[in-house]
Amino acid sequence: MSGEGFTWGTEDRCDGACSPDGRIAGSYLHGMFSNDAFRAHWLAQFGVAHMGSYETTVDTTLDALADHISLHVDLDRFFAQAECPTLRPVKNCGFLANTL
Image 1 (spheres, rainbow, N blue to C red):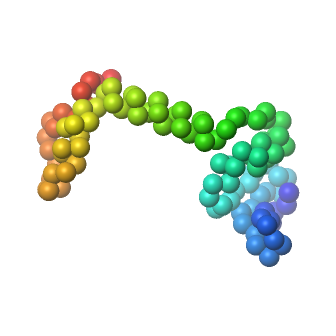
Image 2: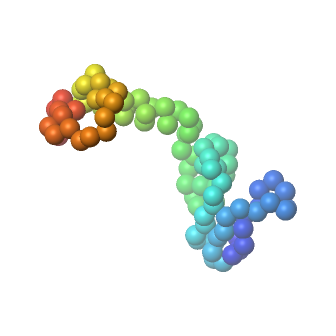
C-alpha cells in the first residue's frame, strides 16, 4: 500500500487512499465491505478471521432492532402522528410506550 489511491477494476480508475505505512485507508466506494469475499480478504491481511455473511448479519441485526422498537414504541400512534398534516411539535405526544 502507498499514499496513492486504491485501484479498482482497471488501472485508470482509482478510488480512496492509504497512508504510506498502510495502516490507515479510506475510500468512497460504497458497499465495498458488503462483499463477503472482498471483506474476508481485506481483514485477513490484518489477521482477522472471516466474520460470516454480511447479508445474514444485517438481516439479523435489523430484525432485532425491529423487535426492540415494536416492544418500546407505540407504532400505531407513531404512524398516526407521522400522517398528521401539520409539522408542529406535539408536547407530550407519548410515542414511547415504555421508558428505558
